[in-house]
Structure formats: C-alpha cells, structure tokens
Length: 390
Image (cartoon, rainbow, N blue to C red):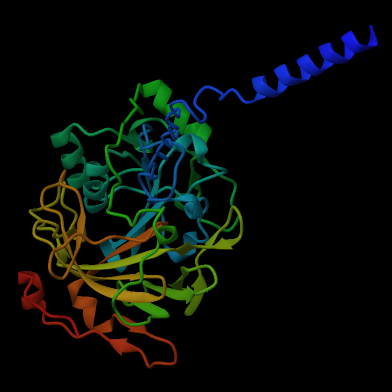
C-alpha cells in the first residue's frame, strides 16, 4: 500500500512539472499580443477672452459690460476698477480724462463700481467691436448719434430711471460723484429691459501669448523700463512704476487739486491698480465742430480713430514700439509691431491710454537708474504713420 501511494505521489509530481512547462498563450512558442499604448487626451486650450489667462472654458459665452467711470480728482478713489480686465483712459472736454472699465462677467463683480459717469463716443467705439453692454449716466449728443445709428445696446441712467445705479451716501462729495452700480443693479436693468447677455466670443479680444508656453510670458525686444509718465493735459497725468516681484506696472495719477502724485486705489479693497500690460497709443485729438449747438458741445473731444497711429507697449519690465489700427466704429482695435506683424500681449490685465499727439513731447519713460527719456515726434509724420521712434 505504501509503495502504491509513493508511486501515485511521484506521478502527480511529474504531471505538475510538465504542466508547468506548457507555454502560456502569447508566451514562448506562441504569438505575442500587441501592446497598445492609450492615446493621451489632449489638454483643452481655454484662454480667457479678455486676459489670455487660462479659463474654465474655451471662450466666454457671457457678454461683457463696459462701465464709464468718473476720473475727476474730486471723485477719487473709485470703486471696483481693480476687477476690470481692461481699462481705457482718454481725454474728454476740459482737459479731464475719463475711464472705461471692461468687466468680462457682470455676475462676478464684487461690491460697487463707480462713480459711474456720462458716455463719450470714443469709448463707445472701443466697446462696440467687443460687443460689450455700454453702461453710463448721460452721454454727449454725438455718442447718442452713434447709439442710434448702430442700434447699439446701452444702459443710461438718464433715460432708464436709475434702475442700474444708485446714489451712495458719500459725505464731502458732490452728487455727480456718488452714482454706483453693482451686480444686483446691473442684473435688474438687464432683466427689465430684456438685454441679451449671451455672447460667444470666437477668439480673444487681442492676440495674447499662449498661457501654456513659458507661463504666458514673452520677453519684449526693447529696453528695460521701470517708470512711465503719460500727460493727457496739464493737470491730468497718469504714471506707472514697475513692480518686478508682481510683474506688474503699478498705477498712479496726478491730483491737480492737491498738486501731488497719488496711487490709483480701488476703494473696495484698498489695493493699488496693477497691470501686466500698459499700452500708450497716440492719436489726433481735437474739438468736434460746433455748428451752433445741438449734438456738438464746443468742448467735446474727437479722437481720430479712422486711420491708426503709433504707440508703445510696456510689459514685464520692457518696452516695444508699436502701431495701432481701428477704422470704422465697429471695427476692432488692433495692435501690431512696427512692421505690422501681430503684436502678442503677455497674459493678464491691460491698461490702454489714448493720448493726444500734442502731448507726445511730454510723454516720458525711464529704465533702471536712467534719466527720464522724453519722446520726440513730428505730428505731421505721425499722422501719416511715417515716423520712426527713437
């Protein structure tokens, strides 16, 4: 019996050994299965329409709002302007400047925005190709002419019973410096008047460096620039000082009442405004003809946008000389290099100042430990686009 069990155990052992020698499917003695590497899912490229930064979706499907902001020194500090993606500044009547703040989504505005002030046609012409809802309190006659001619959506306090703004208690300020709006007020007006706020933007409003290449930065080809001084008129001047840690140009303005240079502060958060991009565009600015009153106030300023002009682009501590083009009221504002190749802005917020050619000689900039450099330009050549910058 023991002998039988021993023989049986030996047989089972041999069976196990030979069974273990049989090639597995696809192993030695068979075809190898093809190993298919999974195709990586492409990472969607989703730039923000207004800044070029990475966004949650490809392009915004919400219509932007463009809000006119009072910039008289007696109305400062303003509220909410640090949230704007783009800030325009240009001279209006009397040598004062006005601001237009572009907000990409009115539902995301935190706190008040203002003081809101009256519309001017140059700002409307910058807002129209962006399809932004134009928000203001009052307007010049020529601005209304553009609104009527193009049947363009706007919200005007004077004609819409203060639905989108309110008077804020602001002791020490004149009443015209106390009108503000916010998300709730804007939405109430949009609902009441049935404005369509759905807008699919097929591209960014300007050419931006791709945010996934070198973190959205390129080094400009020009010289290092730390300080910029823009003269709009004798008492309206805008300054920028470069903050290398933040990679932003920090904004200040001249207070003519006090005779001092002051940081441009958002009263909502107490923070100084800073921009990754600063563009200074020179244009022929003159008074509109005044045929005896009516739509043309004798002091309203006409910014000639029909041809284009020259300017400067500052970013990441450097400068480049540029050209700008627009054309008709609904044509987009376009920036190029001096050879008219597309200008690529670094990702981030942008300040755009349109400055009278007559003030070019007082425009100044300086690099680290350099003396201020004053621009020199012949206005006739600049109008023709023939000038070469220094």
